[in-house]
Image (tube, rainbow, N blue to C red):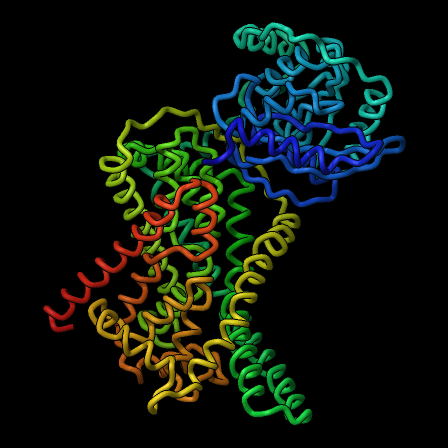
Length: 628
């Protein structure tokens, strides 16, 4: 599963098919967190997503750029610390550099910690003479009063050295000029040089930095150390994490209320115009119902409810990512994951699952051990993805917040729900590690990158384009046909009842056992393609006319649900099952692709479902015993 040496050939084949005649191939190499993908994006105009933690890039992204004299195909290879790989993604990077596919290699180094990042450049220099060292983050170095003698560094290394600030594209012109010079007279690949001793490379990097780097103060990293004492200590690390999560959720909920109402009204106006157009065209009643009451109304509900929370949550989450906080979360959670016989890197994939469980599953490639990788894959769906957030927020606001809807109460309740999910992830990981996936936890080195001021403009653009609109587009693509199917089921009657009612009645006994009903359970089943449409399906099922109502407000929805027998205990059961049920179709397909096993895919579906059913049934039994 994940990237293996066998998959390197697939990367090379795809790369070979991408290259155009006359193009020079340039490999972008570097340690994680040195801004390598930022350089790539600035040069190619692409938006390869980068994360401020080790191993975020696990594949080779390609992009084109033209200089004054040459056409280049840049290949952003996975981050690696040396040419002695310790993980699958490092093996991909090392094989690409050693394989000679690239006409030149650009090693991106961090100006704020040049000594560490220079080791890779020394190793690459031993296997290819067509090397350029790109010293990035010069702006951060200046702020920390670090001065680098770039001409002296070039003399020490014997290869071109350029200094850049990748966030400022104009600084990259020097890099392209250096590439033009190297491309004009490329040197042949040396004959299988003996591998260098990593210890020698480290000592050589120390000597070079002593000669070329000047520190204005010995306490240039004092601010980072003070922040780390606050964010990673045993006394304050967890409280700060919880407060930060609650703050992000509160901003999301409070900020999404008004935009949701505006979108609902705007889409309601569009629906009225669409309905009038079909009426003017003398469309038959069944077609009007299928398109307006089924497709458009379901689609409008999903957009109005999903878009505002995602447009707020994703940028906030990405700001924390850009600032360097997520690796601190992984550091804090390493101890409990180690106690579960798992790898601390699972904390990173768990955080990725908050955005999308499929992305979290792919992110498990950063875990070296196959056993620990499987643990992370199988338990990733225990964290609710963004597709479940709107429904969770709506249910908590309607049934548990103060009169008029308290965003703070909803945020605290959602934080508690996420803490429950984390606890269940620990429990499931431990259970798997002592049963079907026995083994001891492996050791790993987690780099804590320096804190950086987030690029607010790029964060907003990237979050909206790469995350919000992508996820919304996927939900819309599922919601539109699902709305038509649901309208058909709700309006085709057999024996005096609709097909939707027949299906709901069949599931009602199991739903009642779990504290819900057949309509909601059917909504979960029909929402298998995407979690985003579960609540809209349930609302449609409750409405007598077989389509979503004209109003999308929480007050009207609360009235509809209570009229159909919902109480606060029903809402609790619904929240629990929203947290724990089978993954969506996209996530299961991703698990099948990553593991290559139907057995593990089925277990990944059954594990959260069994936990959710058991938890809902236990809570319902307790509530009934106590007379709730």
